[in-house]
Amino acid sequence: MKPGAFKLILSLQSQDRMVHRHEVDGPDRTLAFGYTCDRDTWHVYLQDDQLHLLVYNAVVRTLIRHESRSSWPVADLVPDKRLYPESTDAPFARRLIDRGQHLPFALFNAERHARLEGMAFHGATHSDGSLTVPGPWSVP
Image (cartoon, rainbow, N blue to C red; front, side, top):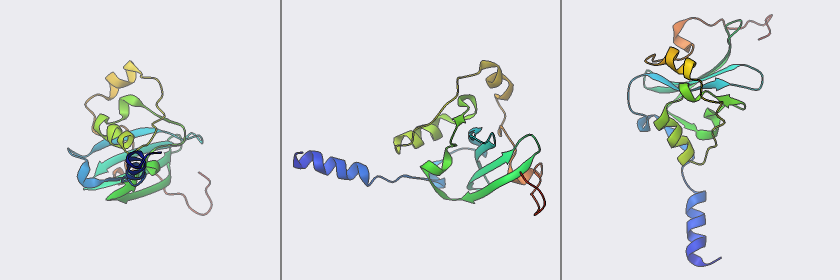
């Protein structure tokens, strides 16, 4: 490897692999929506000046995980199974890809897109009160 190529490789490795709140413009909304290998719903959204990750069981409406931060590692914002392209914000997806993250998209569904177009949130949010917090006796 030549010195110039080596310098380029080092700079690529040291790129910021985070996404920060100040980089996400616009109103509160869904940024990425999909599901996990365990069939849990995966919702990344912007709300109240924070980036939220919400994972829940959509069948029984049970909370699995919720965190909100101003900065996230890009790898933590992508489910281990699929993202719905019609429920993923294009500039947000581009930012994740630019930071080296692969996005595992499902096929585009025109009917789903038509049904959700214009909606700010494409799934439950932590603040909407629609999810049950599991107790010590419940299994999500």
